[in-house]
Length: 416
Image 1 (tube, one colour):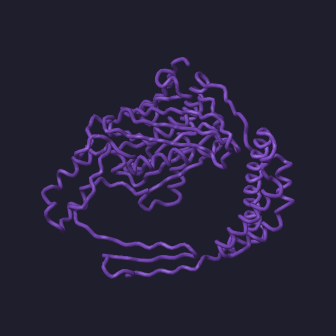
Image 2 (cartoon, helix red, strand yellow):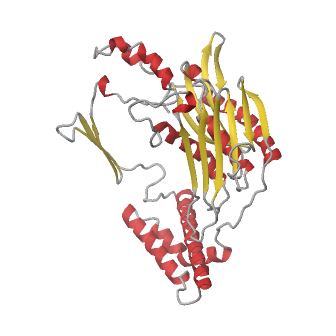
Image 3 (spheres, helix red, strand yellow):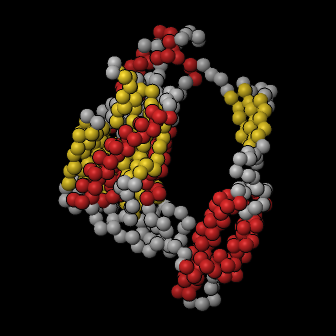
């Protein structure tokens, strides 16, 4: 693969997408650089498996190493351990807009690995990784129906009034009342994650429109990169039920399955649905264990497709009951809510306890209160900035009720 670089001015900084130089043995790789932050995204496609799963084997891995910001990990252990909470949330943020863009019936395993190679502590790497991962999938031979792109939108207040900022820096986010992460493709937006300080719906919609206009620019960059370095897509076999299998399943179980979906009790309903499925598979899609291996393999595949057809029929029946009859899964109407029960003070010796129940789902919670000495030290790429702000509070840490500890110890940022 030839070395290809695509650059564009984006949000007042230069965004660079580079491929063909690093990770040449991967299915595809893209090095995305924005400001002084660089993320390497590589994708690998697994070989088709004989066992037919009922889900897409997509794995997203995102890792931040403190060396990317020129730092050592804090504490006594200098080896970085399992993913942090921020890394896990970023993996999910990358996964959500990408997963729906694979063809229906495509079950080959796909691994997307994102490494933060450099971090300038101003341009956060999470949204850069989302765009880099989508770009790597776009230029690979994986049948990815993208591309997609991810941006962050903030809103800062100036003398001329509030204005939206695309991919705001960490400093700008300290003065922003909006933290909107937006992903989209050519047909529209497909992932929104937002934290805000009571912004109106009108302003939130305006922020989405602002972000999507910039997403289109990123899609143009990825399409340009794909035109220069993209590989031909190899779809392979899609494990979709044939019309004959779907019709067999429909005729055999549509009526009893419809009645089973009306059962109010969740446990009884699931048991009835599973029983109908097992009887269907044994009667119409039994495994041929007495013949040749080829006959067994064909019967195994047919059984798996029959199971998939049953799952699709169940989804259609559930939707039909809601849309046409106004009956939800447990027999409730469209506006009816489950019974809600709540209690506090459940346990005598905890600082706080509560029980909450909605329908058949329960949550039992206990709470323990602590002092400033119990704070967890979170070591990350932006930790150096946090240390600076914390140094001003060292003088008041010994006072339990000091107000400045709560106002300056952490930078203000809307919760997601």
